[in-house]
Length: 504
Ligand code: BES
Ligand code: MN
Ligand code: ZN
Image 1 (tube, helix red, strand yellow):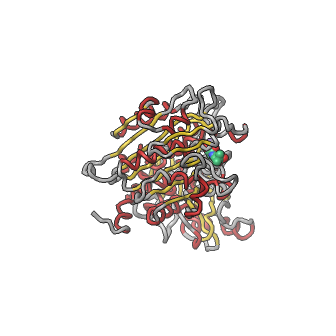
Image 2 (cartoon, rainbow, N blue to C red):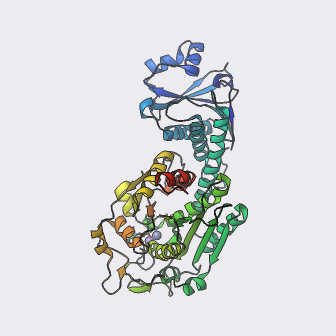
Image 3 (cartoon, rainbow, N blue to C red):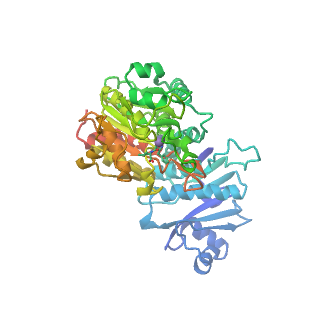
């Protein structure tokens, strides 16, 4: 989408649709007041007599044939004291659906003046909302598709250049998010571990990253018995994918490692899933999608950090070669695991990936995984679970999530949970006691494969990676949840170092 900024007063800008965001409980000012008086007090009247209160989600379309823009959409932002950037993103996404239902491919958006958000960040939020809201997963629909929004102009009162910079950043962030969505939306007949590997190669050659792919033989040679055990039942063999971004001058820096669960499909294996639980399991590589998408944006954002991307990828199938319940596998660090449930496979492939990642002596590890159904019981679709051994890393990620509208919530990892995953005939078992703290138990299992002293955070994105129908910035399908959060964290990683007192 083409997004431009303009210093033209919104009411003078010629567009088929002008979006005018308004706060609740405020008297009309600026463009809204001006338009109202041109229209003999119409907007004031709508507020007073027609139930429009500019609450979050309220909207009203006005036809104004003599204006530069003949249609004006009033959009409620709610009360100013409750305002945050997410309100603006959602308003922009709502503006896109309004434009689409009016069959308009162009709109203008009046950027509100805000005390709590800079012009740059406000323009960034609007552009993100427009780009993400405009995307819909319809690649496989052959009937006529509605023309998508093609161009938008954000009208700003001042700081045109800052607004421009916000838009440029937003477009990189949105492109990465859409890349993640596209990967996750791809059905699993067209998506195998090798597909993710090839995507990594393509990203590496396009963006100048180092890439290394291990095949099933190398995986076994490297003693990744847990990853191999999960992948060995499928015709499509497992892959271990490594990407690295090393900006000039950062060759000696310890990398920040991003690890993503890359199950190209999860049937559950012999502990097979009921069919309704299986139908969305193409999204079991959403963690890998976040990592691939984030890696693809680092060079464009000129992130001043070395970043390692790690993806264990496999397809969890049933066959005469597949892993059986009760099998005992040995992970790369020598720990033995009794696979009591072949559907708890994400933690197995991540175990080997975490061991290898720790060997690279990273400054921090952040893993993304559609790991447990239990996280949806705990949080619904309103946020992802955060599990960590490090308060500072958690705090930075929590605040990045809050800032970009991808909420995270921290769970405890109390010592006592360790008992849950202790093995009877092996070091560990891959499931805990039935129905008890399922998401925490999975995180506790992962921690067994993280070297002491390395700051690590696990993000369980199982409930937020896909939506069945429109939710805020996603029309349907994959959300790309996590991409903007981690990129915001990495953009700010220099600042974080300062807060931790580790300045160079
Ligand atoms: N991929 C699933 C988790 C999942 C569930 C992702 C729903 C997206 C939506 C994971 O591999 C899994 O099957 N977990 C099991 C673990 C259990 C067997 C201990 C689960 O959550 O049921
Ligand atoms: Mn599973
Ligand atoms: Zn899974």
